[in-house]
Structure formats: structure tokens, C-alpha cells
Length: 91
Image (cartoon, rainbow, N blue to C red):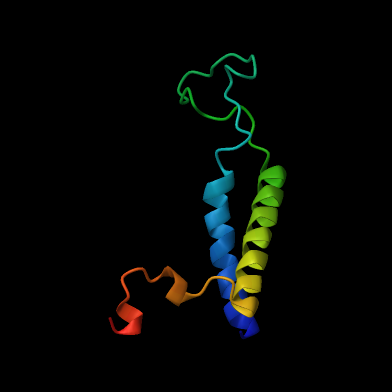
């Protein structure tokens, strides 16, 4: 795999990880024991820690990419294993 392909795939995993990590660790004002600010959603986070969010996202994306790359190198799961219809074997 060329390094630019690996980088592009890592970026895709990173943006997927954004949506996987986003809902975890969020506390609303009510859960934090603070007063709700009028004009904001009840579900809005009380404090959004950008650094912690980016760190969690990067760690998650890196783990996913490493698993993907190891599968690419060692062939643990191949496309033929996922083809339950038998179309690739000409059946």
C-alpha cells in the first residue's frame, strides 16, 4: 500500500471516529448541577473539552487503522469471506 493511500484511509477512519467518540463523556448543564441557559438546547453539553475530544478521536482512529492495516497485510478477513451470495466464485 502506498503511503498516500494509507494516509487517505487514516483520514477516513479519523472522521469516522469523530462521530463514534462525540456522544461519550458529554454532560448537560442539568447533569453538571448548573443552571440551564435560556436559548440553548436542553441536551447541549455544559463544557466541551476540545483537547480531550481530539485525543480520544485520534486514539480511536489509530486503533481502527492499525487493525485495518494488519488485516491488509495478513489477510485475516478477505472479500471472499464476506461474499455470502457466491457471486465471486461464479456460482
